[in-house]
Amino acid sequence: MIMMLFFVVVVVVIIITLASIYYRPQKSYLCSLNVNMAENGETNEDMNEKLLRENGPNIIDAFMYDPSKAFDEARARGVLSRQDYDKLEGEESNADKLRKCLHIVDGKGEECAKTFLEIIYNIRGTYPRLGPWIEGYPPKVEEDDPQKIEEDDRGREETSVHDAERMLQHLSDTDLHFFLKMERSSLSKGLWKEFPNVCDAVREAQLLPKCDLKVNEEQVAFFFGSVKSLLYIMSLIFFECFLVVLKLLLKLGVLSNTSPTGLIKRSHVVLSKHIACISENVNEDEK
Image (tube, helix red, strand yellow):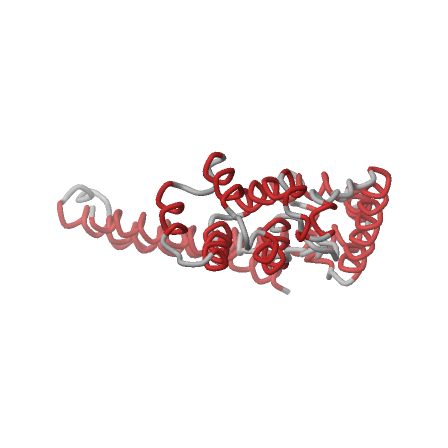
């Protein structure tokens, strides 16, 4: 019983070892197609905060004599809270109050800066010293031309396709074969969506015998060689187990009517011929 368990364990270990050798992971190449999606230009996200900081001195100078109207509007529209308003009242001069107000608004983000600039724009007629900068508020944001966007996207796609084609040309046969086998993976779906022309070219490249047949022949030969080696090893193990079981049966008297020596010899001869035949086939395949 112990020998049979040992035999099963050995066979399982051998099968796992051979399977791990045959299905060894291939080196994968992740084609990183560097597409530069960012364009040169300033962002409009912090435009109002930037405008408020740049024109802070003009605002202080224009509202120096009576900033109460701007403060009341800011309080009414939620730019300044009750606590903020009390902080402004705690300052001694109007200039300090305005500096404090600008500091508070600047700390509340883009939306508060936008609302405060709208307040200044609406009451600009009362404060002529604001200067011409407020007349152009709010600044017009140029909308992107759909035709220009389409042309830019097409240009980026063509550039990426050329880069990908150059990468594929430098791949070895094994790597290209691996790339072609990824047809149903999530990465392959993304590549088909973004670069259909490149994927078509890769699929056509699969027809090349240099790429396909060479790899398959090597793998098939290795597989059958491994199977024959496994059969040879299993035959040796089975022979040893058979002899052990046979000796055990002889000791128990089950085979008392049979000549032990002759039976063992005949079994040894038959199994030896079988093992020699398998070994000879394996050696021929290796040559």
